[in-house]
Length: 102
Image (cartoon, rainbow, N blue to C red; front, side):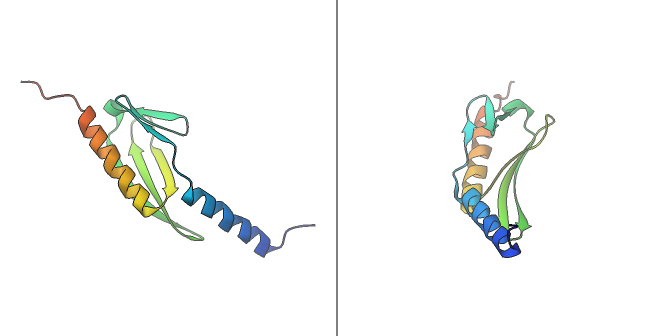
């Protein structure tokens, strides 16, 4: 028996609910950022952006870590978590920056 369209939609809502409420497994240390097995070193990160896209069930909040090695998109999660994560990543990037010489 094939699922009805409404049954497929319910599975989509459940999947979205699970993904938007799960904690993100992001590792941040002195070397850089690791998410979902992909790592970016601080010296290779050019920008950290917060962004929102719209899906079937509403907004999807994310953080994009820009690097010449490829962008790393962290999310989706809640807007509050994206704001907190974006701020923490920006602070960690500043702390990891080499001290000015002179």
